[in-house]
Length: 560
Image 1 (tube, rainbow, N blue to C red):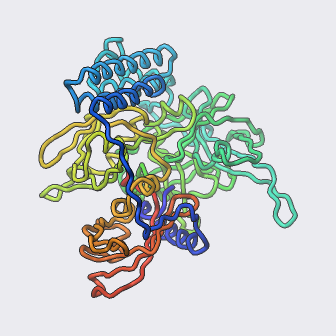
Image 2 (image 1 turned 180 degrees about the vertical axis):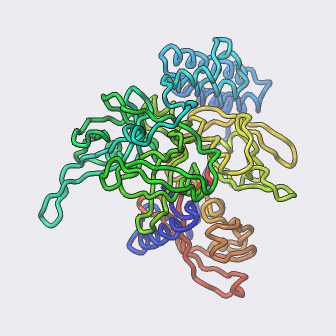
Image 3 (image 1 turned 90 degrees about the vertical axis):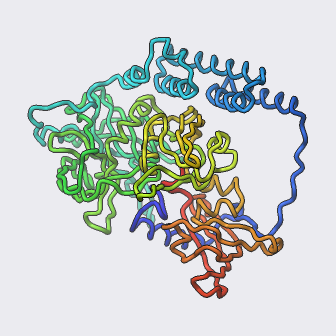
């Protein structure tokens, strides 16, 4: 779950207060940038055009064996920039053949998720050779999802709730003993889960089984489930795969499921629609609650919107199903705010279905990003039109592919969208280390770019903070564009040239032509929050000198 500005209301305030506390009690000095010292000029060696080509082709050649898709993408960019150069043309052909070979090998080895990534990358580069092998993306997807139970079926009559309860489990993570005041207590994490496959696969939350997969955790941990009909029998389970960003995990047990839940949809849900939840609050298995959809879209996750519900949810419900009256899963319970009764949330089932092929493949699920920051763009009629780029990280795939601030992204891989939320949903389907096609508009002209996808950092803002200058990264992190004045070489005085609405800078009352001077900038030890202290001359304060602190999270839905 993310922090300031990600949560529209309560979460933002809570995390902001926590951040201020962290900085008040110390921060990581190694993550503090000195804003007063001048950087020394770097001597860049001069190469002839032949030497540059030799170095570039050599670097691409080295990628072919381990990263053929990235090699193909870089070769494509080099070839398109120099179409008459024979070296680039032959290298591009070589890299395409390497990806085709990797695709065919993945099919031979039944690594269908990998094959899907290769297939889409080849199509993004206009290569049709993979299709000649008799494959389509839909066929590969079918291979990646060998089970059939998770697809919602047309049912003449809805199963009884007593039947559906049997398909839920209580998830136990035994962490051994904890000592408090010289006395030992059982240390356990309690959650819920539900079967989606007759082979014993079940879904729960990542945060329920986090200690089982966290490489930093070195203590004792054992994973069990108990069935609704036999709460005394602990059945061992194992983690197949997990997605920390979406807070989902796939488990498997050796027992045949008493009931398998079909995965439905939440796309047609509206405010006020009735839903049911099943789980084990504080260990009370077979608990069914009902309520309504309070809001189908809340921004609580950096890459997805979640559903707010008012069904009674308590500790232990996490990972249980949110159901329609016909018994199909519409969401996965993932959070409630204990001190606020009735404020509960679920992850829409569409996200589960999106990553299900990769969950079945096993391991840690990672998401894609291209190193950009954008916001919703509206046309002259004030209607949603696309996502405007406000920032592109230096050296990122977006930058290398030619995307620039001011571009309006309208679709990815032919899938159109008008908002940043829809863009994030489309990007969820795309695997890291693959190539996607981005359609965008620049100065009224429609353009297309093939962009390589990197693994999304846990905190994209920290990546930007590390790579760029303060004048540039201040826009995506705090929402304020800066310009270094020429007559302030020593004291580093900046002028504000733009303030984005509904950002930290906007809420702090900054506006264009304000002048600021930094005291220092610090990042906390977890690298997920940043604090800066500035002296400012704000127009709204009559240009009187004031001292102000700005804090924000280093993750948000606007990074992609």
